[in-house]
Each structure stands twice: as structure tokens, then as C-alpha cells.
Length: 276
Image 1 (tube, rainbow, N blue to C red):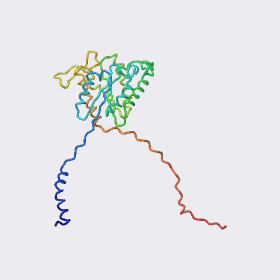
Image 2: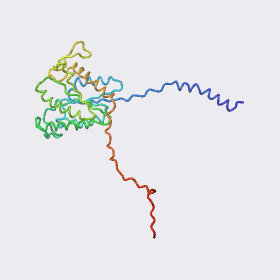
Image 3: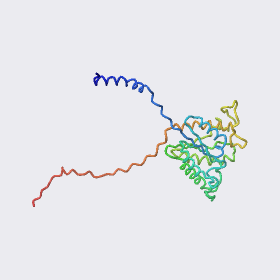
Image 4: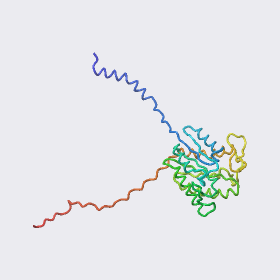
């Protein structure tokens, strides 16, 4: 007849192999969260640059890239295309981790409101301040806790008259973006100039055997090879932002300290008896 002690020892002997196997089973690897990149902009996002950047990002495991673009648009004419509304809709729809923006090349004109009413004529003294406020408002629409915005500067074109306008627009964009904690301004001049500052017309491009022409005949938009070249320069910065720690939320101000008089210790107060 088995004693209780013998039965316990037999149960332990039967269970021990299963316990050992459980210990040897490696824990499941944590599932990495899919990260989303939203690309917003004008014809540069519509055409080869936007296409190539989207393709590169979607080729990375755990990354999803989506594009929303409209040619001949910017922040100057919300009566024609309202980027404030569209930007709000896109970030709410996709909840991106990083938003990549390139626009401004069409903004060298008078600013209007959503109904087409003139707000500031190009060249007027208050145009710069009005445009900067519009850029800041747009950034406010795109930003959210833990989200980064990468604003890609307009590439140099080498067209003197156009460059005079772009110089003003680039300066406003750089200052407005750089002032935001969750936004990064990417200078693109080094991508399209040689060490002497001369505009690059051709460059080596992945997938092509010889240096390829970067721009189309208008001097602004990119060839297929030029779009791939530009995307290859911007892509590492997007990846860096995806891998960087999320920007910390601004700390709430501490409540001011309240000074109070120390309470008296009544046990130390001598008792005074008065004669009735």
C-alpha cells in the first residue's frame, strides 16, 4: 500500500520532465509595432521624389508609408486647396509616427483666406509675418504627443528669379519649423551643390550605371533618377526620426510653494494660572 509520501514523490517525478521542457522553451519575441510615415506636399510628392521615398519606406519591415499630395498647392491659397483641413484629416486617419512635408514652392504670391479674401499681398511688409503664422498653424495641426514632423527644405533650382522668391520662403519655413520642439528642418542645399556651392546637374544614382541628370527641363521637378537620388538623401533622416525616442511632453509647471507659519507647540507654552 502506497503511503502519502510515496504518492507525492511519484507525482513530482511525472511532472518534472514537463517542467523542464517549459523552462527550456524560449519566450516569444515581442511583436514590434508597425510605424506609419505620412508624406504631404505639392508636385514634388506627387512625382518621382514622393514615389521613390514611399517605395523605400514601404520596403522596410514594420514601416507603412502613405502619401497625400496635390500639385500647384501650398499654404498661400486655402480657397484653392486647404492644407489645414486636409492635414488634419490625414493625421486623424493614419495616426502617423512621422510626418514628412515638402511645400512652399507655390507660395510666392498673395495670401488669401478660405473664401479667397486677400490677407497679404506678395511683397507687402506684413506678408512674412502672416505667412509664418500660417506655417505655425499648419505645424500645430500636424503635431501630437510622440509624433515628429520632418520639413524638407525646397531644393535649390539655379533659376535666379525663382530663387529670389524661394529665398524668402525658405527663411520663413526654416525659422518657423526650427522653433518647434517636435519638428525638424532638413536643409537640402548640400544634396544639390558640390563643395564649391555649384548646382549639381548630374549625380550617381543607385540602379544606374552612370551619373544621371537630376532635373527636368523646367529646372524644378525631378527626373525619375533625380527623384530616386533625392529620396535616397531624405530617407535616412526619416529612419532616424522613426528610431529616435519620442519627444517628451512639456512638463507641467509646478505649483508654487506655499509658505506657512509653523504651528506652535502648545506643550512648550507655560501655563499661567490666575487667581479668581
